[in-house]
Length: 129
Image (cartoon, rainbow, N blue to C red):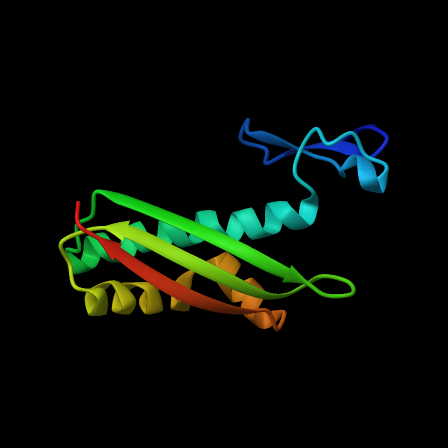
């Protein structure tokens, strides 16, 4: 639902909502992320969620997980993403890499990005818990 200027409130029909807006440099009031930023945030959220599901099946335990994504915007939209997955685990980096590859194969938002031609380059950092 449009609120004012460039601010809107988006609702998922299950009682959850989020505000989108533009920064002041684009005429907005900066009361929320832009829709494009929200899309990149959704990719990070999808990866953390699906990674957890895959890790549980593979019995890969971890004490912390963080996904940071830096999106490169071209003329119209995101063209490439650089992502870092930082995980606190006793598992090997190879186990984490395999879990991330399996995650990428089934992450719905990641699949949307891939189908749109947006490549995501991953860096994995494994830390002791």
